[in-house]
Length: 471
Image (cartoon, rainbow, N blue to C red; front, side):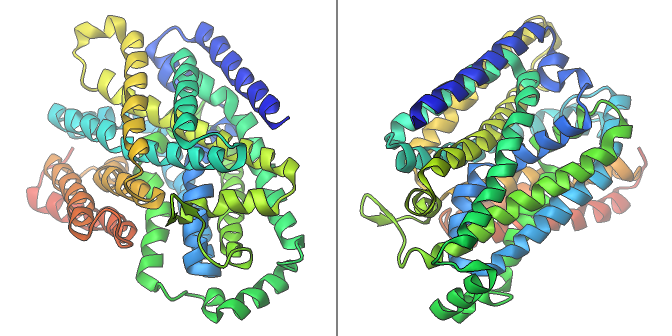
């Protein structure tokens, strides 16, 4: 039964992709849906790209297990900073400025804003290279889930998901993504609500007060305001997951494609509620894993916190919900993967290819979508690091490079080309250099990623003031 429903769901996604392919005639259609998206679709597109298997599988389990209820600080950050403030401060301005500059991508914006084609090219390379690890982390989370819930071996699950993502996106581009986001977002929203209420009603939890007292009985630190891993690791996770979306090309793209500036308020409200429900459901459920497991699940004889949530769903939730949760995470991840592939491919076609190649731009976009999926798979096959760390390295390098020049570029005319280069390189060096120094599997990697975002925000205005000039 689960297999049949999953097959029907996949068939619907492919039909939408085929329908979208017939309406996709230009590069603008493929990448921005011709800037024609309304508030609900825009908000759900933002939310489903924000939250994926990385949240529901990697972050929810590992962070909830280690931090207990103090992981809910991440929910506060994701809701207020990652969604509410992001829409209030960036949506209208981004839509306005990118239309004025006639740009479609983050590298195009930076190149036009700072008058430097080399900055545009360098940014395009960064986008393509450093979004691959994030894509790999999403594939890993989905494949762990399919392995535990459906009994499909990890490698086979990887291949099936990759083929579906590639075919679905290559056909219809962003129009296909946007068209399915309302369906996928609805599954996420209501599935997340059901999961919280069912777990609270479970005898081993005993409601909200029971959850708190039972966690305290296991370890009093699990209900502390800040759990034993400490303030700084938690601070790093909050900053990384909340401020990161401000500088991620696949998130910023949602503001480019707004139908008009007037719809931003409605999209802000919907997006914020969506973020609150999904983030709370994931991290709260993750913290409750301590009530159902005394030790971490194992894969190949090795403890793996990434398996906590799949095992929780299979062993605790009613059988019918395992399919709902599977579709929930699958929906979230499909949207995220589609946005990652689309943005990364566009970075090459729009920002690196010479004008003479643009006649075949749709062909090259589709070809590079497939290449990006293939490279992501190579990383996911190896399983050489944790889902959380893969995502942290990717977000740290990408958002660390783009956040400062993007935000200052929107609001501050005195921002200079030299400042853009300096802040980008400093964010990149911090994210990659320190992650390599401490080890890519280190628990410090999320904190490194957050520093890669914060430090350039201070460097940019200083360099701009010393380098002078006004653009």
